[in-house]
Every structure is written in structure tokens, then in C-alpha cells.
Image (cartoon, rainbow, N blue to C red):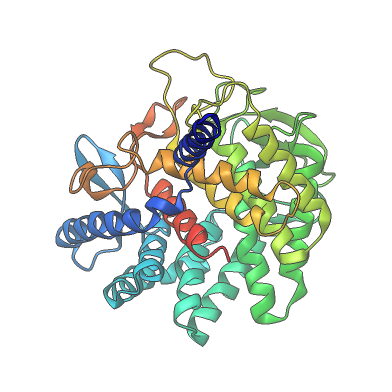
Length: 394
């Protein structure tokens, strides 16, 4: 009898463990259906408002969908989300809708006034090329890379992020790591190594100058354009100059994963792992793994979380898991925990609420007093990308 009780106890413990550590895969397909329904609602609502105008849903403002023009830095995320919905569901309507909104961004390829052209075009046209190979789309990628490259300063070895202003002469933000994917893509299409070389130079200088000893990142560095010397290390969207702004940590982690994927240079993988470990092991990371807007901001019951930072991190973690053997399961579990939390009612909106956006509780910029505890189109984009990566890991 004692042996029977022992077996029953062991069985119950195993079942309990399976419940507590259940993989995100258990609910993944249900989330695909929910995302499909929610974005169908968002698409119909948005499309009825804008017609043929170049407008894209970004967030909610005063209980209304905030629509932005094609030169807004977030404009590429909405068509990118539509591409991922096509990949996740196989429904041709999403391809048609994605093409509709992707083509609204055609003129961005000639824009030299912002580093975020990488975000805009790679999320839209870059994803389009995975489904619908096109010489015309290839040309858009290469021309955009040419425009982005105009912001590269040879002496400093970096791509300037924002234009010069009263505070900074040559500001470079950690977010700029996300625009390197476009340069790698353009180099493969064109066979021109200059885009690849610019990306490598920027990544190397980011490792050298942007990171602290604990592998947290500054937000803004002001470079001397000629010498590459650092004039200042500050923040624009974080809690303080020396704090770890949550989304900035996610941008850097994701960006170095891209660098490793495209170069197979081990130093980029090492950097990505160290950033991932900083995030995973941070004492202020909540139990559900959705970070506060800044890891060093004072914590109260009202301190905002940032679902966008969590979604970016989850997507990068899934990619990291494909490149490591040691600790692979640990990073997969971390990603699954984040995605399970984001898929819960705490963060994922009920059907036809949240104006059709998927995720609640993201933060744009607290220091600027904008987009605090709202949905954001890039939070949805990286959630859907993480959903797709989780589904196609093998």
C-alpha cells in the first residue's frame, strides 16, 4: 500500500509541475485565433476611417484610435503585423491587406531625415519579400539602405539617430541597433558590402560605448562626428541617465541577435546573451516577467509596466534559443513565461475592446508624458512575431 501511495504522490507532483510550467505552446493556437479576430476588427475600423489616405493605427488617444502618417517612425509596424497574421493563419485576406498598407510606405525609401526608416521598411517591405518575392520590393530595400547610410559618420563609425539639436550634436540611441537589419538585407540583395560594413561598424561601436559593466545600456550617446569621442551619456525616455530604460534593453538585445544571425560573429551572440541575462536576472523584474517601464524607476503599485519591452524581449529570446545549446531550455522557458503573461487577460485585450489592438499596458515615453499605459502598434508587432517564432522554432 505504501508503494501505491508513493506512486500516486509522485504522479500528482508530476502533474502539478506540468501545470505550473506548461509551455506557451498549449495556448498558442488559441492566441492565433484571438489575434486574428481582434485585428480583423481593427482593420475594419481603421480602413473605414482613412480610405486611401496614408494613415496607420498607432495607439489610443482620448478613447480614439490615433492614426499617424507614413513618416511616423511606427508606420511600418501595422503592415508588419498584417504580414505575420498571414503567416500565422494562412488566410489570403491578410496578404491582400498587408500589401495595401505596405505600398503606402513607398516614398519612405528616399527619406534621409530619420534613422527609423529601417523600422518602417524592414517591418513592411522586408516581411513582404518573405511572402511575395519582387524585384520592385528589393529595390525599395536597397534604396532605403542608401538613404539610411547617408546618416553614417565615417570618423565616428556610427549612424546618427536624431538630427542635431540644442542638447546633442550627434545623438545615437540604442534603438538604432534595430535598423541594422535593413542594411544587412540590402547588402545581400545588392551584393554591395558597404551596407554590411556600416552595420558592423555601428554595432561594434555600440558594444564599445553604449554598455555598462552590468550589460545594461544607456539610451542616448552624443558622439563627436569626427573623432568618435563620447561627449555625453544621457536618456530621453528612461528614468535617469544612469538607469536601464526597459525598452532600450530589449532593443539592444534584439539588435545583437540580428547581428549574430547575419554575421555569425560570436561576439554578437555573447553580447546578446549578456543582455538577456541582465534582463532575466534583474531583481526588479516582476514575477510575470513583464518589466516596469524602467528597471531602476521607483516601484509603487501604480508604476507602469511595459508590454512592448516584454514582447520585443520574447521575440529575441526565441531566436536566441535557436543559436545556443547550453541554457537553451532556460531561454525558451523565459520566452514562454513572457508570452503566457502577455496572453493572459491582464495584458491581452478582450475581443473588440482596446479599439482592436492586441496588448494593453505599454509605455511610450513617461518623461514626455505621452502614451502611458496604452496599446502600441509595435507591442502588437513583436507579440505576433514572437507568436510566429514560437510556432516555427523547429
